[in-house]
Image (cartoon, rainbow, N blue to C red):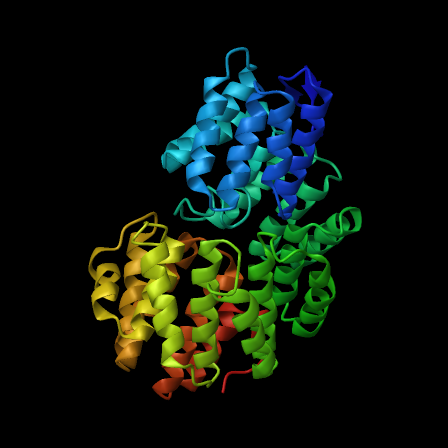
Length: 420
C-alpha cells in the first residue's frame, strides 16, 4: 500500500503509479491543462490501479470526454477486487454521479466524507458553485455549501486546494474579507492554481473592485495555458470588467478570442453561459449586439445542451433563444422546463420572452418571481446577478428609477455604482 498526498491509503505497490496519481490529482484540483496524462501514466505503471482509472475518469469528465470517462470508471470497477473500503465507497459515489443519480450521489458523498474527509477528489465533486450542492436545487444551498466546507476545512490545514474551496463558500455568503485572506494564502502556496485565481476574481467582483480585479487577472493569465479548463471562464471575468469600464474594444476582443464557443477550448457549460451572459450584459449597457451573435449562441445551446435539465444552463439557453427570436426553442423552457430548479427556469424564460417583445410589466413580474429563489439555479452570485440587472433594466424602461435604485442597493450594495 502507498499513500497519496492527503495521506489516504491507495491500493498499488508501484511508487511510479503513486507519483503519477498524485500529480494527476493535483492537476484536477488546480484546473491545470492535460489532466488525463498523469493518470494514464499511473495505469501504465500498474494496470490494476483502481484509483488510477477513477482519477482518469474524473479528468476526462472535466475535459468533456464523457464516453472515455465512463469507460475508465467501468474499468476501475472491474479491477476493484482487493480495493479498500474507502476506495469502494469512492467508486460508488462516482458511479452514482456518472449514472445521473444526483440526489443519491450527494447522500453517498456526504456519508463518504464523514469517514474520509481528506478524499479530495470526492470532496471536490461537491465544492464550488458547479458541484453537487451547487446544482442540487436546494433552498439555502449557499449556506449548505458554506457548512460543508466549514466542516472539512480543519482537516486540511494550509492546503492550497481547500483554502480556495472554503474561500469560495465564504465569498458566496458575503464574507468577503475572510474569503480574500484565505484565497491569498492559497495563491501564495500555489500561484498557478486556476481555481484560486478564479475565486480571487469573485472576491474582487463582489466587493465592486473592478480596477484591482482586472489588473490581477491580466497579470495572472499569461502564465496559464489556454488548454486549462478555467481559461475561457477567466476570460469572461476580464470581459465583464472591461464592459464595466466602458472599454468595448477590449470586451469584444476577449469575447471573440477566448469566450465564445468557436474560440474557447473550455467546457461547454462555460461557453454557453458565459457567452449568453456577456452578450446580454452588453445590451443592458446600451451596446448594439449583432443579431448573428445571438443566433450563433442559440444554435450552440440547442446542439450542446438539448434540454439536459441543468437549470443553470437552461436559464442561459432560454436567454439565448429569446434574444435570437427562436420562439419554438424558447417555448420548451416556458412551457415544460425540467431539472433541479425547473420552476425558476420557467419564470426566467417567461421574463426573457417578455423582454424580447418589450412587455416590461410582464418581465418585471416574472423576474421578481424568479429572484425569490434564484440561488437554486446554481452558479455564482456574480453569474446570477444577470437577473438583478435585468430587473433593474425593465424597471427603468417603465420610468421606475427609484424602485430600480432600491432593488440594486438592497441586492448588490457593494456593486451599486449608480443606476441611470
